[in-house]
Image (cartoon, rainbow, N blue to C red; front, top):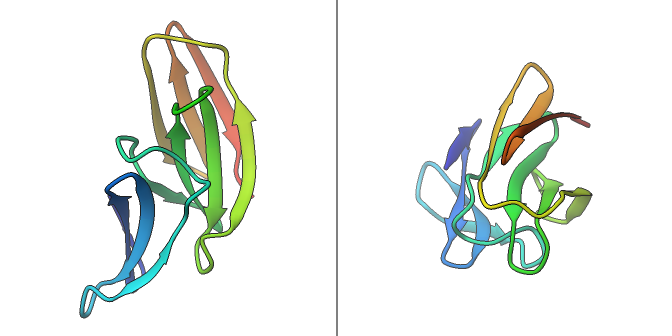
Length: 103
């Protein structure tokens, strides 16, 4: 889960969603962004998460809209995690570390 401005970005069951901090009101759910067990992180103008429902992919959606943005497919791995900072997304995929640009 991530808080950014007046919104909370979190897994909403199976898909990530955006809710208003002030009242918990639902703003959007992104059905193409990722699976519900990934961290949902904000960096740049997007929300980042790992989708491993079919192939392991890093997906982004727009902060305000939840519409699909950029995606990056990773080699298959047993363990993966994501962190964001300094206008980068960092992805650990088994023994490899990827530093992805943020838009």
